[in-house]
Image (cartoon, rainbow, N blue to C red; front, side, top):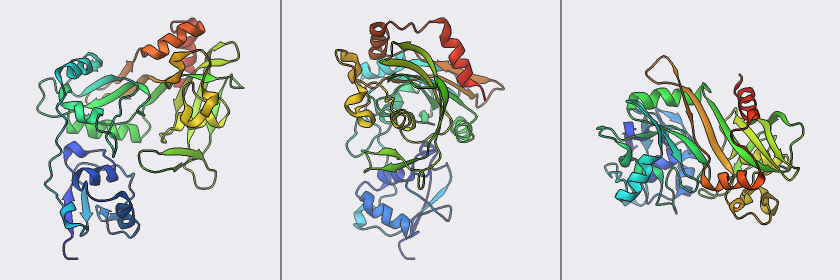
Length: 334
C-alpha cells in the first residue's frame, strides 16, 4: 500500500505502550483515529495485529499506514526530554535506593507521574537524564507505579538490562509487596482476592471495574499487619497479576478502600480530622527480582513517604513492629 512505513522500535522505546509510541512519533494523530486503525488491522507489530496497550520490544517493526493529516507522519521527530533544573536533578538523585552498572532502584515520590500524557508534562520519563551518572545510555523504565503511589521503582541502565528485567516482570519472577492503610478491617485477616478487572474511561482518566465476563484475571494476596481499632487497618498487599489500579480496585470491591483513594472509594475512603489522609496511602515497600547480569536476587526496600509516616504516628502504628516481618514473609511465599 502506497505510503505505508515500517518503523523499528529503538532501544530507548523498549517496553513502551504502542499508543504511547504513536504519541511520541505522531503527536497530531488523535487517539480515536489510532484505535480505528488498530481495529482495522492497519497498524501491526512484526506483521501481527496489535492493541493500544501492547508493550513494544527493541527491534520490533511497527507498520504505520498513511495518516491524516500528512503532517502527523514524522518518523524522524526526536524525543526531547525536558531539561531538568539542577534542584530537581539533585532531589531525584537523592532518591536513589540502589545503583550498579545495570540497574537503578528509585524511591518514587507520591504525586509524580511515571510517564507523560495529554495533560501531563511533568513526569519521571522526562527527567531520566538526571540519573545517567556518567553513563552514555539514558536509563529506561521497565515497570510502572501509579502517579499517587510511592515507593520502589526500577530502572534499567542498559538495553540488555532492560530486556532481562522486562522478561522477569512478564514471567512473574518478581515479588512486589505494598503497604496500605485501608478503611475498616478485612475478614478474614489474610487471603486472596481473585476478581477479574476491566478497563473503562478515557485515556488519562482510566479506571477499572470488576467484570466477571469481560475482565482480565486479577489476583491480590493480602495480610493484616496491624489494626487501629476497627476504623483502619495496616495491610501488606502482593499483586500476583499486574492490572491497572489492581490493588485500589480490589480493596474497594471488598468494601475496604485504601485511605485517601477517592477515585475508587469515594467519601468512604477518608478519615475525618486527618489531613494526611487526603493523599493515597499505597506504598511500594519492597521489590525482589533476579538481577539482570548477576546470579542473585536484587532486593530493595523504600521508606514510608512523609504523609504515610504521619498517618502511622497518628494511628499509633509502628513500622518496626515485631509482626511486620512475619506478615511480609507470608505474603512473599510462592
